[in-house]
Figure 1 (tube, helix red, strand yellow):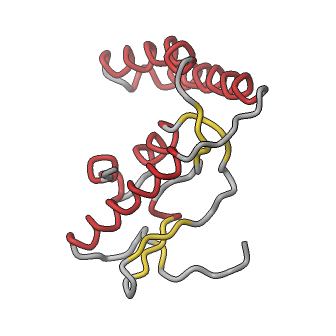
Figure 2: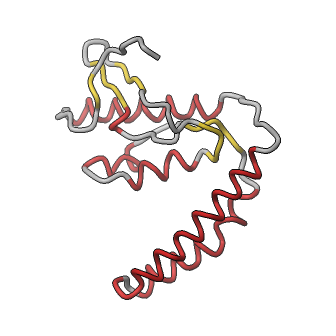
Length: 152
């Protein structure tokens, strides 16, 4: 894509609360439309997605081994449970075409038109819809509250 889109990157913008609410509402609506759009999933895709999930669970276990002494018992138990159960929990979830980096650093806000735009499709691929939301939750900075404000 070489056509410039109107607007400015949302991350770092100082927006009034009502405008910020509008940005997050439009972001949620766009993500809902995107995830609801029927996209054929190639047959081999589910296997590669499940392999990636297993790899992520193994990585969480490895990270836990290095950081366990710094975590309270409840947090350590949660990571252990999730890393053990993640593959089974995700196996039956429907697949969608996800953005893969859906965060305010890739959102544009056109104040003149009061519209939301989206950039950076490099990580877009088939996966679970929840992956776009998990990415939002894990993004550092003031937008950490996005999941609470993102409305669909």
